[in-house]
Image (cartoon, rainbow, N blue to C red; front, top):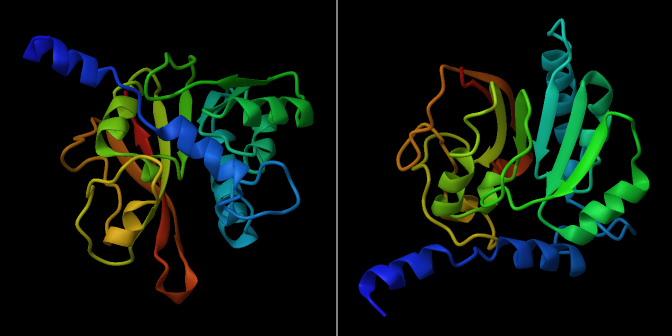
Length: 225
């Protein structure tokens, strides 16, 4: 095998994210609320969830014509279910097949669709706005780069990330599915290297400081065009 062929083969090797996320739910690594699938306190703690729902609702209802929203990494849909009614269509996506089937059984609205996709490798559905709520923080830089390269078709991209409080070195590398950058006192900044995410406008919508110096959850809206 030539060096070129070897590089191509390595590039096509899938990231471990799907298996890692399946394990998270199977082993209840994000906690257990007696549900088959539980996306952790970040999706259920009212102090985190309610302000997010309020600010995204305000954003969505600011448009004369409702938007088509793609929730990329919808989890157990405890948050997304509160936003569906403010959209023209709500497309919820996750990488775990069993989770998507579970959500389909529990949530049924005329303007709601669920898809099992790997957002780093699969074609994304069409939409006006993409939501990525505490998704990218679990992924390697290469996987983040692959995802953000697919977001250029959305007019708005709203990203929520758990980052350290105060100054920090952004975008320190991690292995996909093995925790977040917080344990390295780092967090994602999509505008910084190696990402250089291209946005026409950037606006911070929400910042929630967690107790006991556990960092800040920041929601940022990027207008792409």
